[in-house]
Image (cartoon, rainbow over all chains, first blue to last red; front, side, top):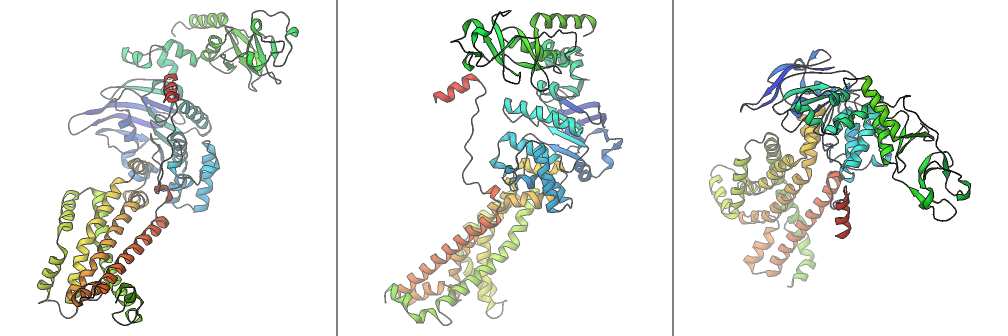
Length: 368
Length: 245
């Protein structure tokens, strides 16, 4: 548990970076500090590992005041990931990851072996191990940065805009992988970002800070979207918050899934029979959806790959209502395609059924 | 006697004033001067690079040192030291001092510039990970400073080796002997031979430094070609611009 107790940071010129911040980052959870530039989020994070000294107030790790610890010893308990990874340019990838364990007296062989495991854990092939940082892309470097921060298996992790310096596609990928990793390792994490989407996606708890270094609101992502405490937070989480909030509502049994008539590629058109609408779902040999086919526009007698409309998306039964709604909106037939954990078709849900389920859920919870 | 004949004359390859001996003496003065310069300039460069203190003063002094007339300084030092220094050292000490003054600035600037230019992100990351100041210096800043430090040492060495010819002015041995004696005797083959030997020595040292650099500087810092920049279009317009260009 990382606990801020009335922490302020004022610079000698009178600038207040952080103003009376009290915040609890619970163990095993990911707490995001988010806010516009100048809100003191990075300063707050750097006060945890004492790269910046607070002017007043205390920060404690599991009840121990950080000021009572040696700064270097303190930092070794806290993994640290920064924006551009900050890898050591003169060391190979594996030695970058093994650097701190080696510094603390581990044997070369053992620390390297552990480093190789960590690289695999963050999704880097072992062929990267002997390369140098400049030979890697930004996204790959960032994975190494995460592996390095985990090398000594610290209970806490600080991440300073870890995914900001990569392009949006890689960023989404890194975020997904990081969430999977965190589900595995359950570190106590404080992550700083200016990107509210990232905050809502990654955070178990999101602390919104406002310019001037005061805490505006701390809540779960769903709560933040449903009950922004004031106009600043409402504005900050964005005008799409109604739609975004659906991302935190799980699909449940109240939404009727209906079996869908399917065709396979290579099937003769004469065997299709009567269809309820002009769009029919195509599946592969193991019943996984591959796309929609417009029965009125099939070229020739055989259904081929060129007949497929690929605009639709699929959603799993464990997915959110937002994914479900998105699937229905993206599909040319306005039916959301639901799959099971193996990727096989479970059935479809109509846009109408989804919307009425959302409406009913809202009526049942008038506060949200 | 032509230049070729001078080189082919076996008499020039042996004895106390033969080519091997003169090269040896020349290298000896150079090595002493280089060792003293390193002892002085590297620690000072580390201190300046690490603390950021005294950079302005040192840069000013270093530049002033470069402007000193070597020969004039040599004579001045000899005149100043001759009453107090006994025996043969009165020739050796001024020579070495002049060479050290010449060699210190490049090593000094190479060292502190190298440390200051060490990847700031890497230094910040190391600090956040729990490296102590000394560990940051030793494991991150110094290895990153090595290419610049080494290039400083290289240019110092070349300056020392080429300037060590001035030892001959004070009657000392070294490759300068051939040049000065040749001039005095009107033996231009000998003069040219001295110059050629000096140039060859400098070239060999240059190559040796390149080899040493390859050996001790991490390949991670020896990037000679930049990786081709990948441009990932994130929007359709960017993709169109990319294909159009």
